[in-house]
Length: 440
Image (cartoon, helix red, strand yellow):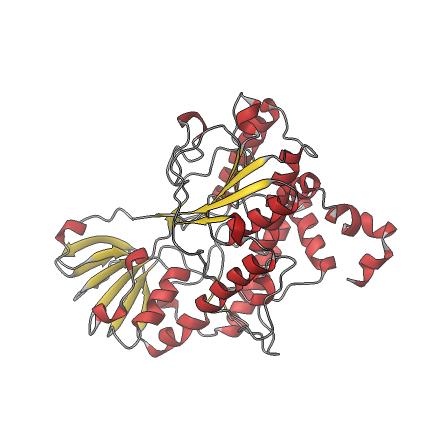
């Protein structure tokens, strides 16, 4: 009888997991609490974002809309005959050890609220952007957005034509990148395989130089695309690529240029019913509403035994091995549950998560194995030391995503565990015995 697997979550990750486990011979069922498959939204292009083996169609926009993505994921379910294995409107609430479970509910799940002094003095609404659905509610208002990244950009674009002024308070600047290069190609087009492998190796052998090089290139591209950024915006110097991802800023730039949106220093405290003091000493008066675009913490929306809770401290990285498997003395527990996409590095998301899920599948099939408990605990200690050192070196003030991992080490482990052989056949050494690799 085929091993049984439950996949929790009916978004893109869940579909990739369902397809992979089904293909590998598992008896698999996907459970989704909603009555339809979930979709996602991202700022990257279709050329960087497609699921391996299922390219986004030519007729789709270079930067897909939410509707196009929803159709794409439903087409994926149709293409690989996944619907008979999907249970919509079925919520998983608690985990037991009767089989294997893949938790594929995503990593941005718990709205994060800042602690702002004097907020009780403010008389207007202050809501997280997760509740931002109707920009018309902000007609003729002056709005303060707290936090500057992708969700802030979405809110600002939606507020255009409704709000009269939008301030966006931020702590540490941001690298702004365009959607398109001057030659008309998408900005995030993938480099050659040669250069990609070079970056992976460089990040492992010379991590400081790799980070410096990436920061230099991204900063140069940002200045070329968006010159003459006022110093008063405080966007430069931006945090390092090592701790903060850049923003594809095409949607926000025109509102910055028009003056509708103005980046300002971080909020120090609220000083009145409609007044805010910034860390720069400036007072913003006449604020009608506040929108928190401060991101999300990771959590697992399924009750787990306390001893394997991956996020015992909110806002901190998971304490699981590779952010995938629980570190527990019982090997049955270590091998029976896995987190999907809670560990990541700066390469296309669905591609690396596809490999990650294949690694999980190979472990459950018995073709690969997890290390000993001692080795898992050692990895956790080394990871925490790495993260602490990176945050200190690059003075992380804004969100340093808790799922970020060292690229070279993590990619090598995934490649080896999934049995794909990318490094073996296309790596610096492997290409000496695979002449075709030189053409890629």
